[in-house]
Image (tube, rainbow, N blue to C red; front, side, top):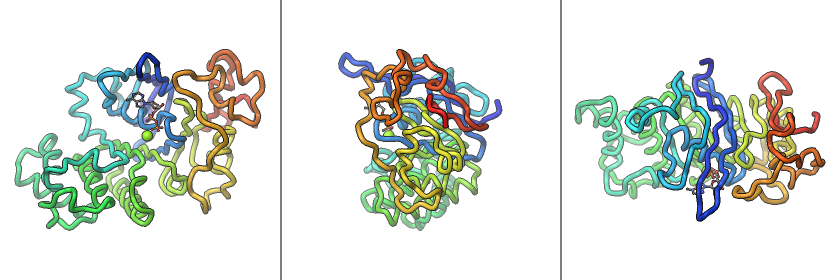
Amino acid sequence: MENFLEIRDLVVEYTQNRDTVHAVNSVSLSLGKGKTLGLVGETGAGKTTIAKSIMRILPDVGARIVSGEIWLDGENLLEKTEDEMYDIRGSKAAMIFQDPMTALNPLMTVGDQISEVLLLHNVKDKKEAMEKAGDMLEMVGIPRERYVEYPHQFSGGMKQRVVIAMALACDPELLLADEPTTALDVTIQAQVLDMIRKLRDKLNTSMILITHDLGVVAETCDSVAVIYAGQVVESGTKEDLFDHPAHPYTKGLFGSLPSMAVGEKRLHSIKGLPPDPTNLPTGCAFWPRCPYATDACKGDSAGGAPGISGREITPGHFVRCLKEV
Ligand SMILES: Nc1ncnc2c1ncn2[C@@H]1O[C@H](COP(=O)(O)OP(=O)(O)O)[C@@H](O)[C@H]1O
Ligand SMILES: [Mg+2]
């Protein structure tokens, strides 16, 4: 296995009332050791579902990984038992969520929460765990004296630092960061991201970073995948995507950004709405919003035309579009 993480043809559905939500529709992604892949796309595109599938933390009821493979360090996570996944979570792979409160227990001191993670995995002794938890707090820029404080005594940015300390406590080789700074003030966002980058470099962590912020992509990622309606519509190196975007959706999102010298950082918004995931259009999922759509794009199945199912325009730069660029 060449890549540290490799996702092949992942399909994930939710059942809601009597409808099937087609959240992830044959996604393939890869990530090298120590590298960072950015996932970008509008709300509802399927980004969180991809990350939760890797961790195998989708809801037990109403969610289903229909098919695909997720290879992490040579092992297919979709073939692991729940017990095996329990060991992998937190030791090999960890996830940081957008809202720090979903990961913190309001009734437990932050230090004990980090200790608990350590004790569940590689540390046997309570005193050693407390000591290491103090080190972790310091690593994320929180004085170790604050070990005994509760989450409500921390600001939003500080809570997210605690969550990051928890996620990194067992030296995960893969970190999934799902909009880790979106809930924070703009000034704090930059600090927390800077910290994540430094820790990643120090620990040689491989990372998937889900973000709406193209400035963050430019500063943090090696490669990028643009997700639309549960599909990767374009992927490649950061330079491919910023300097030579090929898919009309990517061009729209990246707007009139002057290369990577980013002024306006948010994703550009594009006219129209993403399709209803319970009733996806035939052909290319983007055609109803695409200024270049032709009849061929509306074809009767997503796999019908080779361009729609994806092609490599330069080595490592993939696009799902019929339009020649
Ligand atoms: N537990 C769930 N039950 C039903 N539908 C869900 C559930 N979680 C997410 N979805 C739907 O799956 C699609 C993808 O969601 P999500 O992965 O959260 O996207 P993103 O993270 O890109 O915003 C959306 O249409 C969303 O409404
Ligand atoms: Mg999400």
